[in-house]
Image 1 (cartoon, one colour):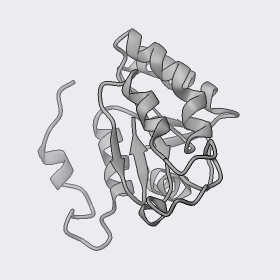
Image 2 (cartoon, rainbow, N blue to C red):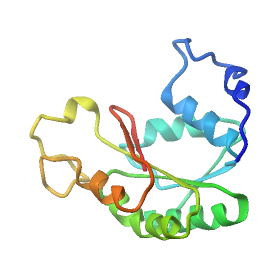
Image 3 (cartoon, rainbow, N blue to C red):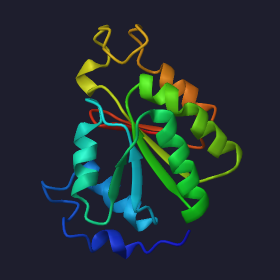
Image 4 (spheres, one colour):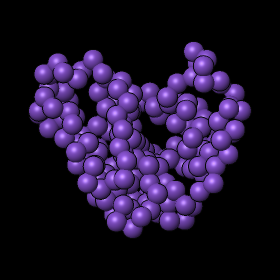
Amino acid sequence: MDFKIGAIQNSTVPFNSPDSTLGRHLARRLVQIGVTDVFSVPGDFNLTLLDHLVAEPELNLIGCCNELNAGYAADGYARARGVGACVVMFTVGGLSVINAIAGAYSENLPLICIVGGPNSNDYGTNRILHHTIGLHDFSQELRCFQTVTCYQNIFFGFCRLC
């Protein structure tokens, strides 16, 4: 896909502004690569991101009844439009959507899956959080995605890209 680098710089919110956030940046980048519809399942670990996506006038947030449906909807969208995106919850949502992500990966479909996660102050505390599998280690989900995605990244305190 061909992008125009200058399109980011022409945004209404400059990157060095205090109003510039990762959520706004992700929303703008999704629009720039051709995404107009994002399939999602809202939950406490991704609500801040969803607020930024809703605020982007060129994005439509489409609520789904479960994560697997969101993943398959994004898969179909990618087949029709060139790239798809979904936003789900930490661990329970990520492990549910992984079948759709793996299917898209096996067919070389460009699919962006953003998984909400705990804040950075939760890492290393040895606490067991809700939406986990009951372990102190929050990286199990990321390790699962590493086998069925071409790129993963953790943005502490905000979201996880898979």
